[in-house]
Image (cartoon, rainbow, N blue to C red; front, side, top):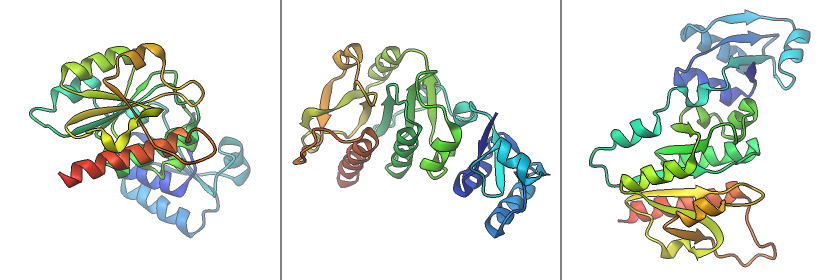
Length: 242
């Protein structure tokens, strides 16, 4: 079982309408009491519970915790096939592909950037990415409940499907073409590799290009979540400009 304990995470998850509950409450403060009222208004069961029991179930709680299913973060999102089928004639579509992002803090931070910069879909490999629901939801400030996500078994197949639908695939690499020199308008997908090894060989070979962030720092690379934010900002800037 997975519990959300962050106030923003609980609020956004309830507002999103995804299946969840009960909401566990033990000596809640003013902010937690607001969430209890929200849960009641949304017809989510609220259970009073002792502080000792709540600490055992959700150690990082602040007097409140929401039970969620691990799969709920993608259950209300379309499959990749449904997503592509629903695009119609849309020309500007932005997708992010995550290959084995294992740190839930990175995963949550990337989702937050995806929400801020208008990403239409996040694709990840099932069973290989970060799975800690509470950390992801806290780090993403609850945006995990709003960003459309699709989990699939084969990322290479996903890349092929996107290409067939008119997408250009760009891999993130510090040695790639400076991102501001690459046209990220239209149907584009940004592929981010794992924290340790980057993009795998087969996926790299199927990218249409590699994009990087010019740096003058002494360390040769940025954290993957920081890089995602910079790249997605540039994609949005280009789309807004033209």
